[in-house]
Length: 465
Image 1 (cartoon, rainbow, N blue to C red):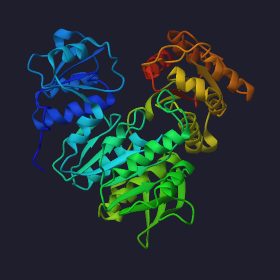
Image 2: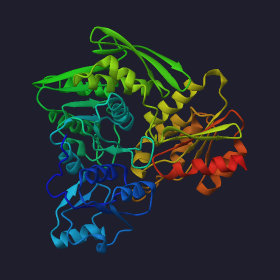
Image 3: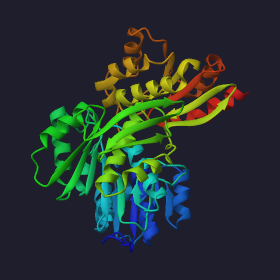
Image 4: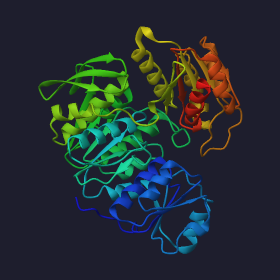
């Protein structure tokens, strides 16, 4: 398709340009010919990848970084009101555009697939991007994680399809108008923005009302997703496709067979049985792949061809990503930070290893005080699935501390389940501690949405020493 640049986005300035969502939009605009600039708190490989595309990236936040001829300032919900560049934009009368509005504008003229849900969005969006690309359809896409290299979270394609991860955390997914929407699951999360499940359902219902007339809603087997489907079943001109293992599913999963770090999946779709490979372990990833298959079929793509192409997907960074092996110990990194995600990843690793496995040792970093306050008990119960765990202090991200909310909540909950769990305040001590614990055949999992991911290479180096 002919690349277009939305109004006011010819010379955009991104505050927090290195973030997963922001960098993707910046990349697509740069590929379409916009003169992109922005700032981030620290240098990163993602920032370097944007510079390679011609973007100007400043490290640190200061009013002088905002160019005089900037046509807009793009922000996410994580940007605080006292940011100096945001204040400078207000003083100069430069329009401020939320990240979701920028992404919605980029999808104009395309056939969008929006992937939503409390968990699995990044993986499912990535599967679609890879599968459609393998078929030569060259989709545009915006993902909340890198596929295989820094900056690979987005692409401006020549095809008609645009695949986007749709974030419910701040209700920004309500800005999109997809032809096909996927809702994998619906659970209570993002407690700073949602006070109850009723508010969560209302938000997702609003999202489904934005699906284009004649469009399709694909829902997963999760009870929350099925509840959502029941709530919106009366919407005019909307096709609902239910995916799952139950007999009532429209796209039914007949079998999932674990094969080491992959799965073989058989589905019934359109009167035919299709068997294909999912090249990542775990039943939840198999379900994600089938949801992607159903979404592609809803756009008229040959299901058998897409199923085979989905086997080309081999993972995304921080989603059970193998960081390396040293002294007979595998080190894997996981972005999981919600109890459901934590449980699914630990179960997937046990299933993949089978009877030959050693111990699973987890280094877990809780993400956000509000999430820990509400879900600390469940996080501890999830960690009880590991053979041993180190729990770090809470990664605050955008939040200020809450009285009485610490990682001790998680440690106590895990210990009450009989788990071998230790609270560790000194992140720098972790590589040495793990090197002393891990034995050949063991697997070490760094888990969380914060900077715990930085520990993987350090643990490997210490194991090798």
